[in-house]
Image (tube, rainbow, N blue to C red; front, top):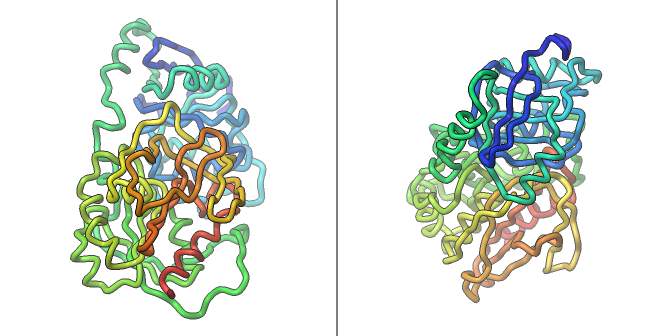
Length: 377
């Protein structure tokens, strides 16, 4: 379908902004929290990241879809986001890896998308006013005021436990390491393997791949798994994954991890980091517009090295409530928010960002080796 043949659609923000563009995804309406992602590539990984459940993603890169779609780049078997907003959608991919077109992929998974809107204007509006709910609709007849009321009456991200919707329904083994010729290659893969349990709060596949490549045999368990069931497996360590939504409502996860931290080494990423911070008494807070993209500078305070990181989070840890036994190990150099913590005595640590990338740089892959080192002390 050519661009001129695509039907019109509207984008409505809760602040009253109403823009008209063209639909290139599913012919459906959706409401989600609007976030912008600054990654230049990696749109398929973003689309399939469970952490985006309940959110509509605006990609600031102006031309999206030019290298198509392929199964290697999927981070799950489902598209979790509410909708997609881009400046220009490529209708015909050009890549030897491509197995399909972006628009067809969105239609197949029932995700609405809109192009030909001013993504720079929308991004600036979010940066000034903070995160807002947004409606993508094919209703061209209703008054703008009616559509704005519809957005404002929609639930917020914090009104639902999104983790329960994305987690696995039963324990399962993950045995696959790197599956693509384009994956980051590391020399000297360990021969000795350690059995660990990974809590699935919305885990990306590349995290699980990285754990396997680092020498772990991974059992993935549902987010609501009690600590007793984990300890029965006698794991060498426990991993806490990324995931969607507000960490403050995940009492069941915080309670389980609280029973594990003094018994086994623990490593958390993103939502796992926020859960771990709550275990030690810290609070989390909603950021104005979060960190979403592959170009966030972070300093590792333990080495004073700076890494460029991939991030995807709308909440952050308040360091004021961390006890003396827990130290901040990483900070964001843009806004000084907490990017990592560790316990001074227990083999427990976490980071807010995504060392597995997908998409993004590979500067922080060393953290998986750091987790392995905790198990072999």
